[in-house]
Image 1 (cartoon, protein in one colour):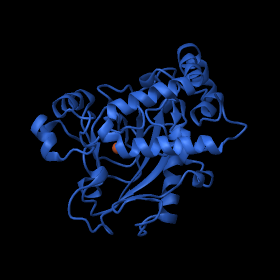
Image 2 (cartoon, protein in one colour; image 1 turned 45 degrees about the horizontal axis):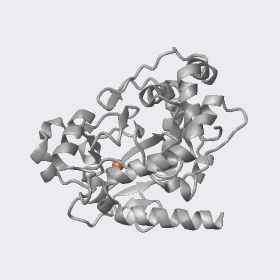
Image 3 (cartoon, rainbow, N blue to C red; image 1 turned 180 degrees about the vertical axis):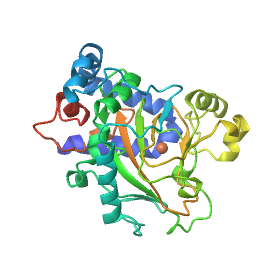
Image 4 (cartoon, rainbow, N blue to C red; image 1 turned 120 degrees about the vertical axis):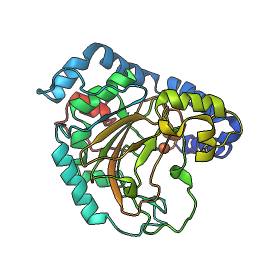
Length: 323
Ligand SMILES: [Fe+2]
């Protein structure tokens, strides 16, 4: 175990440090190859379950499920503004409770601060105390949409990004004057496909620092024009560079009301968020990946999600509690 960790640390430090020099696309391919060997059998079971047993798994998880997902990702994304999802009220109420407990606090410099303008309100172990955050995201309606897109039963991200996060975007403590980090366009590099289901907890308008993205086909055009993810190319793309190669009118801002849901492949759709959040913006982000990730972080650790004996087989698979 000790040696395993030393190798894992060395590989992750090397990739983390030299990824731009190696080329992001190339290091992701390398990781996919390695993880394909290491976790290939788990992934094959996730694909086999999708191809041969999906209907049964979805129904066992939710006897009221209609049989087909209502939402299908097109061009890498889709938005549902119906507010009509199983358990959405329970999950929103749980998010409210967490925001009430932990929102509005200066978290700069703590492990829950992603940046000075973007705070996570929970870590993964905290999910044991806020269990209803899972309810919406493990419903058959959500899993069916994500599975259909990925061609397998997905798993909550087992390392980075953390699979379930309640986010607070806020400019209240931000002293930076220029956009940086996740406020700039990028494609996520932890895995591809990487599907986010993003649930708005409060209404989100421009002053709450909404998520913004480009559809997959537009992003693909930008990847080619910018030589993005090639050797030596920067991970973050400024607006100026982006809008030299694509029409700014292609940008979609995920503003909306409490209960609105965006499904999006963040490895194929350029995105940014949390700009100028004059008023705090709150959303839950659920991150689904494959088992054969595009990075080497599983060499280091694996996040544990709550494991209850009464969970359905599907839910156990999605939580990574069953191969
Ligand atoms: Fe991202």
